[in-house]
Picture 1 (cartoon, helix red, strand yellow):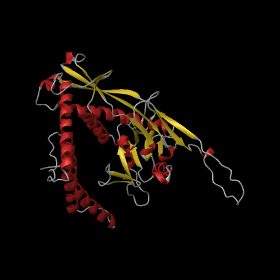
Picture 2 (cartoon, rainbow, N blue to C red; picture 1 turned 180 degrees about the horizontal axis):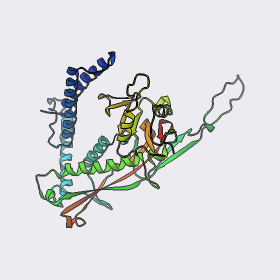
Picture 3 (spheres, rainbow, N blue to C red; picture 1 turned 30 degrees about the vertical axis):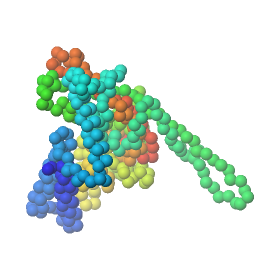
Picture 4 (spheres, rainbow, N blue to C red; picture 1 turned 60 degrees about the vertical axis):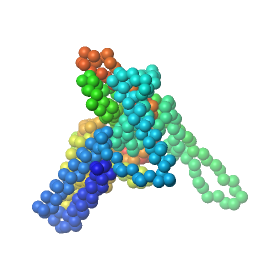
Length: 392
């Protein structure tokens, strides 16, 4: 039976084969693929892309086959009982959520509890939405997360060097003068935001249609797009995000073109301690402009495709992530972010709430489903992040 693990293992094997071909090409004097190698590379890339599609379908499909359970024995009896109990809870909450969307009241399955914003979504369904949000938006997954409700105050130590703890040499029997660093703090608010998904009444009335998976997927996509925009760009008077929180800014000499020196200066703005997990973030058009940059000595492109990396490209040794929320090359715009995203603090509570709007879209023969979240984000460690801004 097909499992996600099996597909991932096959994908990894093909990535290793592909990497070996590129490494072999790199050792040659003439760095070109032969006709046979080109054919093999095309086949491997097609297999890898097909594996990605298969994995995504298995993740979203409720019919994905789970690995065979281990044979029962006295040591695993209690774990098996717990697993069965968990499955029962998942099935019951899923049915409650489905009945809520379809406006079915069922005493046997029970009904969702109400709140000011509608029904409180079952934990198992909320976890699925949040998990997909993390899958879709790696910026949120890579940030430092605080999953608590309400306002959160995070202490920041030594933000400026004026009052940090100092060490000094002292002779015996002489007093050591003490110094103490100053604590500052950043506050993460609880900004309420909603994501609206409209569902056709035909789909809702079709008992064979998997309405729960549809809502989970659509809600996760809407929330992911919103959260990623706020993390990268922010909104005045609401979420700060990277655009307003990054203090290490490199300004390009040009307002319309990037050069390799700009990227090197941006990368070197981040302290060495944060380099190991650093990534690049930019728009697709900015990525294209960088892909066209070449080393002047040998004419090779500075950015190379690397299918073994998380996002498919490496720039100056670091992964590149493309986002449609990033601004394109334009005067005065921050077009590239670089650094360790753990320097960004995000507060995203799991207490999601769902509201079904039966009347608002009745003339469209549709039902609205609104998901409410509590969210905020600010730069927590300015040393870990840098931005490249185009000249005026």
